[in-house]
Amino acid sequence: MAQIIQVGMADLRVAKAPDKLMSAGLGSCVGVCLYDKTAKLGGLAHVMLPASLQAKNVQNRAKFADTALDMLVDEMEKTGGNRARFTAKIAGGAQMFRFAGDSDIMRIGERNVQAVEENLRRHGIKLVAKDTGGNFGRTIVFDIETGDLLVKTIGHGERVI
Image 1: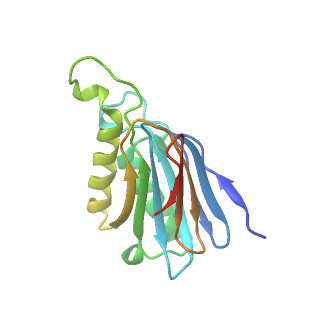
Image 2: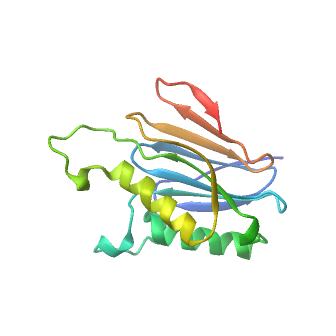
Image 3: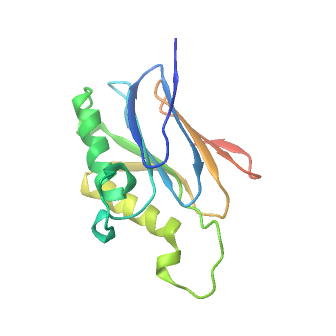
């Protein structure tokens, strides 16, 4: 029987079909889903910040785009995945609040999306779909059986990417 496995903030999980991975409360955070269609294997990371290099405390490596992607790729390979087959879908990266000025530091959602895309390229993983930006939250459910990513938004409906 299929399970829905919750992935919390600054966390990551790997699962096999028929299980599903779910992460709620994506605002400026980015949900990164990696998929190996042949192995029916998937992983989900709930990334909060773009880079570990700018942080004072890096104990939780799942928190940052650079280190979370390294961990997720490693976990999927340990579970039987082949990096050459991995594809990615991402969601989140919203700008939840407006701030005066154009400070780059305050554009955390956009910076998270850029960092995730850069790290996917660094690992040679193709980004096949994304639902990012805006100013609304998202909850995602990643179906490992099909590779579909259901994106539920607050006030903007649902869609499958």
